[in-house]
Length: 289
Image 1 (tube, rainbow, N blue to C red):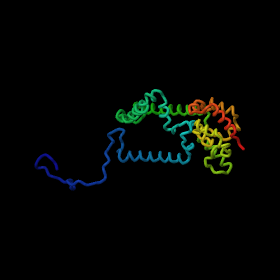
Image 2: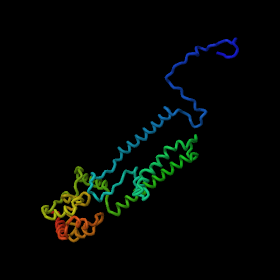
Image 3: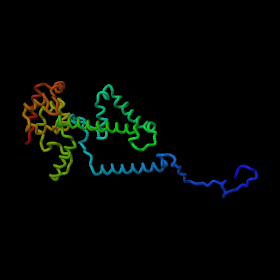
Image 4: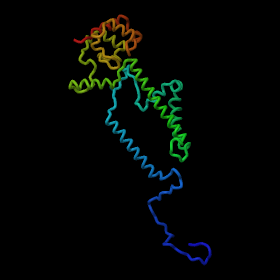
């Protein structure tokens, strides 16, 4: 309807008084807004889902093609085992080793620093509100990304180097290396790999000897096993072929490699010098038939 003089003629184009119903929402026109060229839902969100699906497929391919290294089943008596998390948690593992993030300051490492990191991610959209897409013109977002990436890479590398150094100092072979070596050995021999015990072909000598009770009393059983088969420490089956009685006593008193001196522990458990001497004599008899 035209407005103005009362003598103007009313003109209807079709029937403009009735609105057409449509279930399809009209896409807004973003041409006047630089940097915004499409609707977030469903256009942009669909692209994000597609990228996420491709990345997930990539991870699945990697997990199928490259088997993860596995150690032996968890053994609480294995005092020589050095725990280490998966690679994507190494940076947090290393962070909690520092004095200002552990001990009396553990809340800083477990709450404050992660809180600042996640808080920065949550505040990033509110701090970086510009329309610019180029990273070198977005100083806040770029700085947060570079600092976070550099910190994660540095802490991961340092953590892994310290782990390798600790293995070298204590002369410990990682469990997954042992399993691979045992599997290859059994495969060459045509045998199935079923986690054989070390020295399982060596028999226990004089199992009824009174020194066996001293062995248990001195807490040797916790690491070396109830039948000298090993576990948390090397097996003692056949140890008499490698060490003499005097050398065994020296190991008990002074330690050797990753094994600490056990004399104080045995003494506190009530083991006498005479009993230790008999224990070393019994262990020296553990030889292959």
